Picture 1: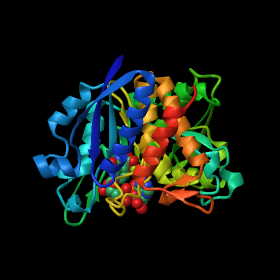
Picture 2: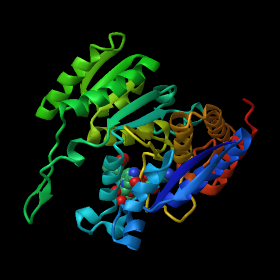
Picture 3: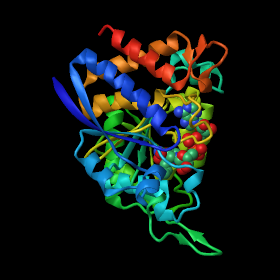
Length: 358
Ligand SMILES: NC(=O)C1=CN([C@@H]2O[C@H](COP(=O)(O)OP(=O)(O)OC[C@H]3O[C@@H](n4cnc5c(N)ncnc54)[C@H](O)[C@@H]3O)[C@@H](O)[C@H]2O)C=CC1
Ligand SMILES: CC(C)CC(=O)C(=O)O
Ligand SMILES: [Mg+2]
């Protein structure tokens, strides 16, 4: 029996609720595939600050680095918003990503056929959308120096170096080679010097992938085009802040931010996490959609552990639950057979995943 060590970082808000459902589904597929998971929980975010005074205790980094993969929920909430920057949950998350060297955040945005009516856009615009946002994750304006604020001024700096752009561009082109061989690099090169360098380096890297068609788009136009005609995109390559924003926007093509998973990968252990935050407005109500996290667990199985059969089971479980009309509140349109709680949705997906005939 193969055995894997998984670091579980539940975090704040809905984090524990959605991670519990992903664990339920992982255990269901493990039983079918003769594998086992040893989970080790670690604190990050506001809950870590409350216990240790640090949103990212060293123990969390150690546990993560000694595991095969990290499954992450979400951090943050109003309770911690007035703390000094370094103590805030979000600083812990940024530091964590840097410590683990996860420079590439892969955010697939697919529209499930079963949910074309859940989108706020017309079905003919969203049906068949299948794109991948490749977001640089440990550089750009969230990390650049100088940053700070005083009474009357606040400042941050967007910095990218040539090697940082090269490595994320290679990730995007390699992914495009496995897909429809199209990369759209999104920047703001009409205004930002850093984007001019970005564009130049992406052009250079593109020469190593002659089969891939490269285009460039300014981020403001990209935000509009994503809604106007999302199927024009295959791989979107972009920096940290633009990717953060565009992927949240892309989630509305699929119907809810509670649906989109992600993989944060780089030089060591990967972190598998939904694209959304801790959703304090719905925490504790049992209504959060766990699908983004369950789908992130599937990405973990496929990319970190090579357990493709188990991942296929999860993907099938999600699709089948939707096909049979099960919906959490965020995606409950007119065609919902039943509006389920977070925990019911996890159990339904686990059951279908276990029954999947591979
Ligand atoms: N990776 C992370 O841990 C992230 C943390 N955050 C933090 O989360 C906190 C809340 O941030 P917001 O801007 O409100 O973003 P958010 O993504 O937490 O929530 C935005 C909206 O989407 C809804 N939503 C999010 N996830 C959902 C799910 N699984 N099912 C159903 N509805 C869902 C929420 O109820 C809310 O109305 C902040 O402290 C923020 O810094 C934000 C983004 C990412
Ligand atoms: C701390 C933020 C950068 C988290 C976030 O919004 C994200 O990674 O999507
Ligand atoms: Mg975000």
